[in-house]
Length: 565
Image (tube, rainbow, N blue to C red; front, side, top):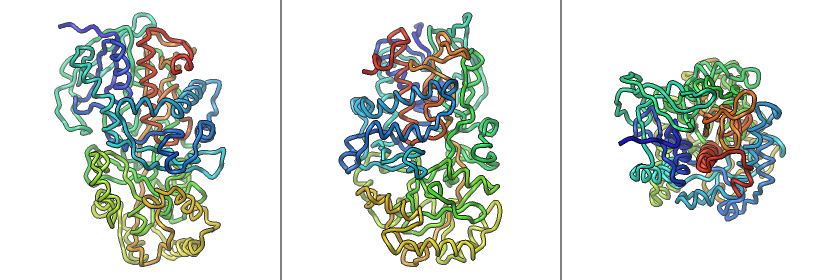
């Protein structure tokens, strides 16, 4: 039976599923073209912790956090630092305003109506650079989905799969798009290669052997193909050397191999404009996965504020960017300024038990599996959570010792650069330890620890009681080699608020839309230079929703207020 789609969606990740959900809810027929197999439905979102950025949520208010749209917008502007407002940032800024408005109003209800639920505690990610008007979240806003990334995916995948059964959706898996079909300036379809069948498990690199070709036509194409996170050659080509330092020679991948950025160049060749190529979100707290799924598989430590942070030469990182979890880009600058692409945490058993969380759905089986009993046992039991303990025992980046001389000797065996000087490391730790005897301090990290313990749940579950690193009662000592981990593309295809891809002259490319990471999560760069966290999944949802709703109306150009009121 023939299937004539109203819209072709390229990519079956979260943004693609959201766009398809909106389209099928309006009765539109959608062909979803995806280069991987059905087992990869949901894309990168499946592997995430499921963090979502909400503003003034019931969860925040319940634990005494006072938030507002005005405070969130102040934080967003300070973090984004938009400096190309008349050109590359013109639409990113508009998307940012629209997104923060939505995060403070309809976002939570939209997801709640679909069945998504979050945990009662709210995390404080990207705590900031120490300035009220600079980078960072002034208050905790990181809401973890009950079910993590798979839970986010399923609330959209389930209705899309139901629409497939009704005949409104067709999936073309193992179809790799190589080009867009044009009729004059208008995009009217896709062409590409049919890849050999491959039943590789989710996330595992699959065959790129072509066994055929295809062409599919529709009045509109929505590109939702993701970013460049596993294309390290492309990342290094556009790496912002002048802003953060030389591109790392050693980089590990926080996303699967198929996250290659191919569709950016393909859409660009069809007339779309790619902006803010130099903006990307790599993490400094990456560790090699001891049980990898894809090549160079990396896991990010989501740290609390208490671990001491040193560059490769053994110099303690300074200011708020030297506080773990506070200022990712600021920390990156200090680390790369050493001339090396790695850094070190030194901490205690007491710190790792409370303050080490790991990114990824597979690293949080209690939350992913929605098992309350398992959650309580794993988070409240003595010792580190099971996945963290497994990394401590098996991870190549971890060393454990009973004394500082033993620890530094073991760290030096792992070093890819200079050897650490024991006397200098001890001097810095002792100086910091002298600051913890009082509930006040001039050490910015100690101040951040006390501030981090103000939210009641964080004091109980997330931030360790201040103590001396060299206090044997809190041992053993732990050293962790931290690597640069690739993750998100912050630039991309420039789009208007209907997710229409724009040409170099600022006019929409007829028939071409983009959503999610390939569009810089909206506008070609909604985050500017820094992300506030919990905003990547939300950006996929918001931009995919905008594309689906615009195409469902069959028109573009109405104001955001009209569309989202």
